[in-house]
Image (cartoon, rainbow, N blue to C red; front, side, top):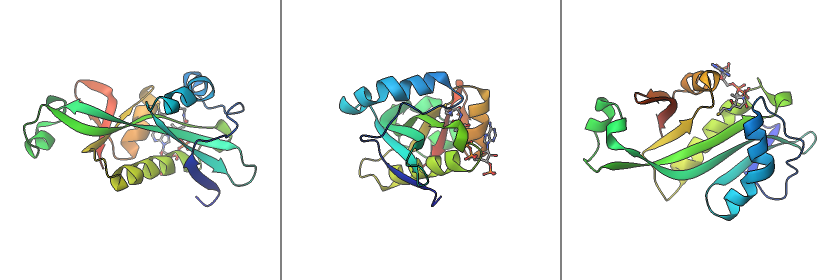
Length: 157
Ligand SMILES: CC(C)(COP(=O)(O)OP(=O)(O)OC[C@H]1O[C@@H](n2cnc3c(N)ncnc32)[C@H](O)[C@@H]1OP(=O)(O)O)[C@@H](O)C(=O)NCCC(=O)NCCS
């Protein structure tokens, strides 16, 4: 992934970013800086080294799961606290001109590594898939679906 630098969103130009998901494009162009300012989410961008344009982005936030949402096998290994701390990979999108080159997968790995390095811990990473294709993408990367919400998936950090 030496073709990209992954960094915190700062003054990057967000206006040209186009993924397959208009709702995520709108979020990135109109909403994300407010979420960052209000400490609702941290946003990381992949910047292409060729043209310095944003090729992808993702957001991270603290979240929690109800213990009963986890599979019995996973829950059995945890203390019986009612909620389980987790890290939410809230939004992820890759510009259409950069899709299919491994960048989406690389950003998920980057998010997992950041979560693993953080001093504020989460037991699992949680993702909310936009649609079935996105859920299959996350499953391909080792995430498992929650029984009560198949578009919400988790993976050990
Ligand atoms: C889904 C998305 C993030 C994938 O990004 P990408 O850069 O094209 O994906 P990658 O090239 O990194 O793919 C990584 C791996 O996932 C696989 N993959 C990609 N899309 C897949 C899908 N829909 N189902 C199953 N596997 C998928 C790839 O084949 C690749 O496998 P490999 O590592 O074994 O070769 C991108 O298509 C996108 O931004 N879509 C619109 C927004 C969206 O759906 N976001 C998801 C979160 S809601």
